[in-house]
Length: 131
Image (cartoon, rainbow, N blue to C red):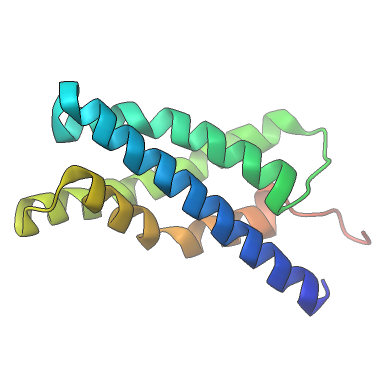
């Protein structure tokens, strides 16, 4: 892959991450009015994940592959790992530092960025060899 293409992809990944993080934090704040910090975190996660998959597949990685089932399965496995990382960090920040739920969610989300970029770049949305 050309260096400028990789840089552009990383920049798009950052924009997608920022947009999804804002949506996730906003949903945490909104749902927190009724569900509390922990409930809001769980309720905000699925819509944020769906948004992230769509923006990553079609914009960040410009993936036209029709192997949607495999991509969804692998993406969901990656999300599980990312969730475990996020949940652990979120819980520690809320318990140890007493952060607001939305702020702890932002910090926890930022912690797993490298894992997700590499998984999507090298496996989930990777271009076939020779492309």
